[in-house]
Image 1: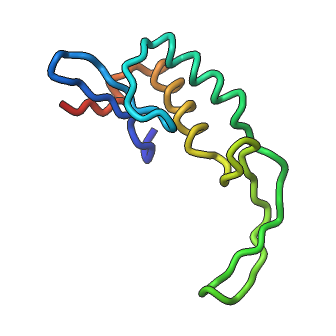
Image 2 (image 1 turned 30 degrees about the horizontal axis):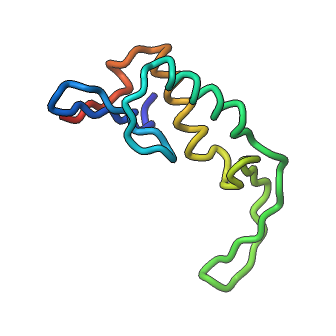
Length: 105
């Protein structure tokens, strides 16, 4: 798991736990609600077909970048931010919070 950013969890003054979720920001949902959201994100944000891409080197020299995959929903390079978050969420449930969660007070 080296190189992966930890999931972000925040504790407020009253002791409530807030999770940082892409497109929603900080929420204080239950684990079951976050699981359901992560499952829905993981099922919808999937890689599309391979696409040949045209990129520019030095701002003017075109070259082919092949193959490129894009998310079917948000059309960003695969693996998109939402799919990465869902993957990290499921990994954290399997491995336990102590290794993947960065708690900020």
